[in-house]
Length: 364
Image 1 (cartoon, rainbow, N blue to C red):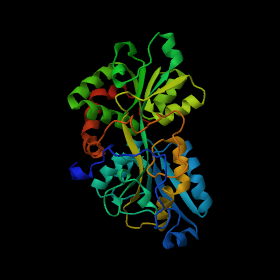
Image 2: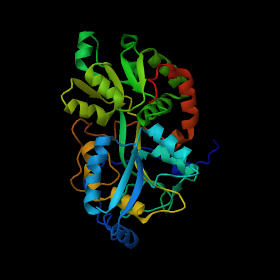
Image 3: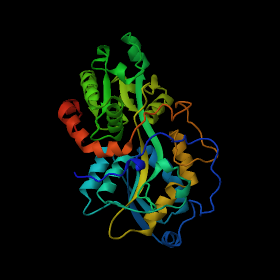
């Protein structure tokens, strides 16, 4: 795939990113994010439906949508949900005949690839002026807008580790130690956004040659590469795999359920990506699609995102750091360039698949 990437000045770097908690920004004189445009308001007065593609977890989607359905009961929202890699591939396959109207909560790196293929329609949702600059496309009318960040975590079953008299790994480097042979589950980066953000973090942290050498050692310790980003956390919780490379939210949820797990954020810095939204470029763009994107960064869903994630794209009163996260969640993230991650995605996944796919669980 030939790509045209933005200049150095447009790169998304973690430097300067702010945690989604603390004092709110001064109120803007622009319309608030829950004030729909006249066209959207008219659309909401009659029965309509939109198709929304998402990589969010099923239980999150159900909760998040509550306020949208309450505000706009006449709009039917058809959700198509799958893992990040699978959803990205589906959207690209449908490029010439788009089925989705809106993308909600897909990895920003995936949206950068789609933007490069001219698959996204510029749209500035109501309230976009409140979104931190690092969380949105740099164009005057953004083609994508981020909502939160998710990150690599190591989920460890303490009971299983005690049985084996093994220390709990604290870093990527620890995961390569021979004593963990056959004990680790990790998401396949071709199907899972969590898998790819972890592989990308290793490459940007170590450099390509050293990263592939480390991943060779990690592969020796691997029990299975899963198709889902949350499955390794669930496997760790049940003891099926004593160690799961997953993401913070999933591990924290398993711990809340009472599973004997510890959630570790790697000391070298967690890999990360941001969940982001976009309008799909197509012949007939429904006003309801824009209404949905207005709602998706409004105060009520932002409060719900904050129950699951520590770093948000909008700072507002009442934002918190949920239990289980670092007290300074930004400082424990790797310093990454998301544009580089998007640019390298195709070649990295091809190389990874060639080297390691033999231990992947079968695709659904």
